[in-house]
Image (tube, rainbow, N blue to C red; front, side, top):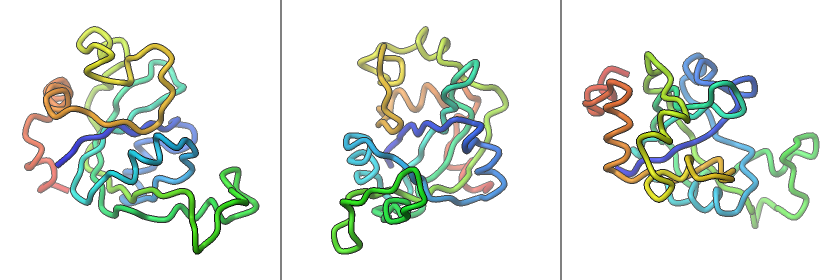
Amino acid sequence: MNYWLLKSEPDVYGITDLERDRVTIWDGVRNYQARNFLKSMQVGDLAFFYHSNTHPPGIVGLMQIVQAQAIDPSQFDPNSEYYDPKSTSTAPRWHTVKVEFVRTFSDLISLATLRERFTPEQLLVVKQGNRLSVMPILDLVAEQILQLSGEIDVKSSLAET
C-alpha cells in the first residue's frame, strides 16, 4: 500500500462532500507531475485529504483509491474549465483515480503542525512554493500523520467503512 496527499479547496470539493458522495472521481488535475503521480496510484492505496486555500489549511481526513488509471472525463467537455482540446478519446492526456471516503479526522492537522513535524524532504506539502495538488507520502511519514490524527490502526479504519 502506498500513501498520497490530495489537495482540494473545501468550497470547491471538501471532505464533507466526499463523505456525502462516498465515492468520487478526482478530476481536474492539469499539472503533468501531479497527473503522473495519479497514474502511479493503485487500488487500495490511501490518500490524505488536504484542504487548501482556506484558514488554516491542513489534512482533514483519509480516503482510499478504489479505481486506478481512470480517464478524466472533464478533458473532453468543452463547457468544463478543465477542457483540453488536444485530448481525444483515443489519446487522452489526463488520467485520474476514483477515491472512496474512509474517515474525517476529529481534528484538522494544520500546515503549521506539519511544518513543525516534517522537513520539506520528508513531506512535499511543507516545501515553500510547492503548489502540487497530488503528492506521494513516505510510509514512515504517513504513519506519523496517522498517529497525529489518532488513526493508528489503518486496517480497522478501513474495516469500519
